[in-house]
Image (tube, rainbow, N blue to C red; front, top):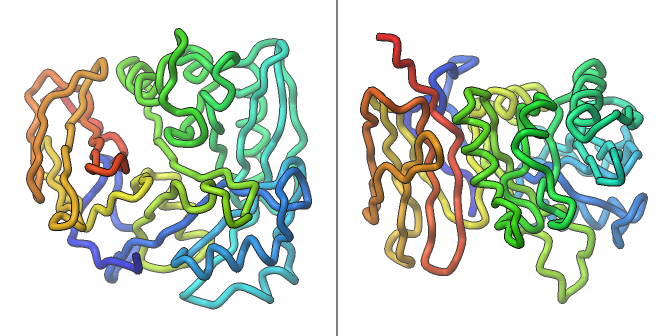
Length: 320
């Protein structure tokens, strides 16, 4: 896919460019495993797969292990061209249900903290990750559908980032989709950003996991601090293949320019409070301006082959 130059835009009302200069998209995956935990391939092979498939950055997130070493960085990083992020998947449980959070940007290992409930375990592990200087991402809330997390548990755990696309994200059998979870939490007034990741374990020739979902981060440079700061502030979008070439904030609204428009059909939904679809647009440059009653807008783009993209919520100020 390569890198794409961005037009000037602000993805969320509280975001502004952190430095002068041109901001561009960087493609990355922040959830993947090697044979150091339950993956099937050595770290070198995993890193090389992403480098050879056009990724700009990668976080290795083995269960309970810090796989990214100084030696691995020296072997694979190339300044301005490819970045390795340190990370670990904090693998916990509460009341017999799995609670997994990725700790991005931590130097060592963050131990599972446990908890009296799922929400308590989310909160305890999130705080431990933040105290270690990392960015906490709540992983695959619907990864095991029979023990899926609820919106209330995610909200009470204080999650600021969660995986909107990873494993079984569509829900079913009485469990909401990650989109429904997201809108429930946003409607309650809690800001939550959605991350897409492939959580790849198998890099064999028949595996469909690697490259199935990723994030596009907007930054002026490809460094650990810049990338993590962009993710922290919601300055990214998530995708399973849809390319958003430009995303511009208008007054109480958003406008997009979609890539590959001549090759596929597209449907863009602008979503507001309660998960209500406020507007649908099938053009190359979908735009929407919200009324005074909406608390937020976020965008979901469908491509005719089934690929999706999600922007981060634009929080609207209704006081004026």
